[in-house]
Length: 481
Image (cartoon, rainbow, N blue to C red):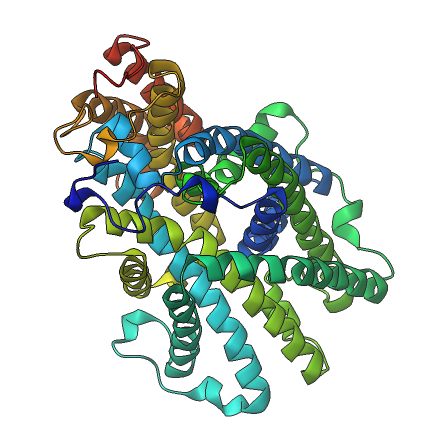
């Protein structure tokens, strides 16, 4: 197979069949490691806090993750069949040069997530530090004041950041090993926290006993649909670059079964743990504590607090390494393959994650769901719609592998039709996003559409792309290559 040197390196080239050795258990462990994290715990509890019953919150979480599993498995098909990462897969629909657009969008979102998870891991270190030296809470603020944190918090943040950078330096296989080791430990830690809450509160408390605050479908839907979109948006990034992992799959069955058994089950279980434990805190402490890092600080035993924070560190780094490093690292490598490899792309991700000041993204739970999660899903929904329509409906899953790595092949330059379809998918959600961040006022039809941002973007962009491309095209042949 011939490749242009400016389009490939060792990290972007197809994975040889002999190295496609990830079985279903690898993907199950991958999703356990990614799904058990603090945002998963917090998001379901916030739904109950918003007025849902715990049953409604669980069904919302489960439905959202079953929905997102469909494009996840479909997107992963190309990775397994051709052994290619996401930026190369995107070349088929957007063109060799145009693929930088979806790769960059995915990378920037992942950098934000990398920062959020790194901040959470740093907060765990800060909690342990507070036990040993309570005076660190009085360290001076980091200059300038608008940064919003003090030196001790920032240094703990940077310590956890350095751990992630070390894992990047070790390479992609170290991430798979980490997920296998972390998965059973994290499940046990989650069940242990659930048992503690149940025993301390003599049951899970009033939140699991209270009814939904909504008396009719209209009021309930005002929270349900944005929340469902947020659930889908939670993993919208991975629907794009799941081929970064499925390229190592032994078979299509392994990637599908592994993801089916790992994603919706783990997300729903850990979301229930979040709701149940938050419910129990009302009985134990007299208030709902939905942040587990804050909750653990209430424990009387310094040893128990430290052990819990170690679990938080492991949960967070296992999520960060897989979900928020691999995708952007490959995306940045795709921009300049001869100079940027996986490791250097990961280092760039780490630096941008600091600059984005993730502690500000997490400061407001409402902003976290309605601005951050739904906002970026409005961008990524159209991208996955175009890529899946192109791969399954336009090209019938048949790609010219050689031409994906050639400047003068069938995928050269920009596919303007994909870019037009992307804009068509984004525009309907733009008024709602501008209203959400306070740039415009309004509550009209287009603002309301924002609650369905991922679905609207996917549908508009996918249909537009199919029509612009003129339907199904002839499969590539060796003579045409």
